[in-house]
Image (cartoon, rainbow, N blue to C red; front, side):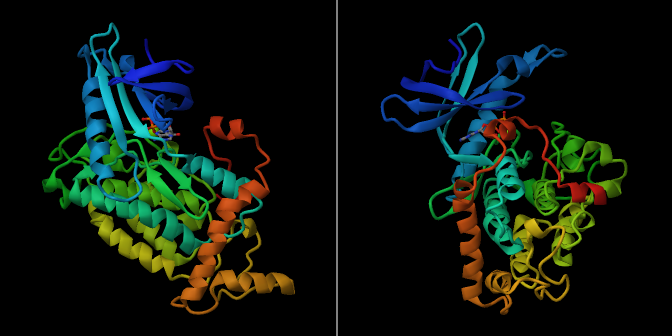
Length: 397
Ligand SMILES: Nc1ncnc2c1ncn2[C@@H]1O[C@H](COP(=O)(O)OP(=O)(O)O)[C@@H](O)[C@H]1O
Ligand SMILES: [Mg+2]
């Protein structure tokens, strides 16, 4: 019997009680289940066999897809960083409709998209989503994990989007986990440092086409993925976060220049340095982007030092600091005291101040939603396809 909520399932002789659906994608469903013997929570990914049928060739490549995902998910988990782990996997091919399963460790958290919406756009408890903390705690860990995948395992994720990142948190800490290695590709060491210009030509091997929002041209047009492909996706993520949740729309892609993202056009208060990094990461030609995640990491670390401007979503429409000097503007005395600790008025090497920023972000993330829950019901967030955009930004676009 195929996997069913409320029923047990046997995978390699281990019984799991299937509790609920965690997510449904185009090709698979992911369920929360509990190991009947140990009580451990797991996520079981079940592939929709019929979706892999090719009506032209009459072949079904579900098995190849499943095998690729198992192998690459295992490979990336060797990074020793926060990552999703393969606990078990099984194919049941003697059935009338073959079944393919991967058992993953359950990552308790929200997708980046839901987290962003809940914490940034609806949670009034969050006042401190400052640029350096987001770079430090979200973008850097993702870039470092991908650096490992590219250079040590020769794997490109290729589907690095807001729904494939889960933000996991404990009482005192939080971190991103990159999931869904279904579209990933092992490219071998020959391709890791290779990015001829122009790239999308007949000399480059063709591969699958992915129309994911945020996908670079090399992926949208179905060419061999390379590290610069994931680098573009990271640029799109950086754009998304500091524009208040704008995703590049396919309809906007009329010319090559449209691929290059400039968050400052939507968010006037963003420092030029940040805008410049996003522009570099989202160049049309892979060869014009940074060559490796190692280079990107260096650029991100430089961004952490921008402490002169306190970036604050709540004050999107009325900044609390001067755009250039970073000095406080027209605030009540108490507020000014409070802001001073968070804006980094001392120089950027002051570790005490960096710690204050860290604490305020962590505090806001961990305690914010409990103290002041989102006004929207959870279901709305889960079911919504699109991110809401703050009215002001939409107008400015
Ligand atoms: N290991 C996991 N722990 C918790 N939730 C998960 C896990 N893996 C996937 N999910 C949830 O299921 C959704 C779909 O999973 P994903 O691997 O992205 O499948 P698809 O290939 O169908 O997009 C994710 O967005 C996430 O919400
Ligand atoms: Mg997915």
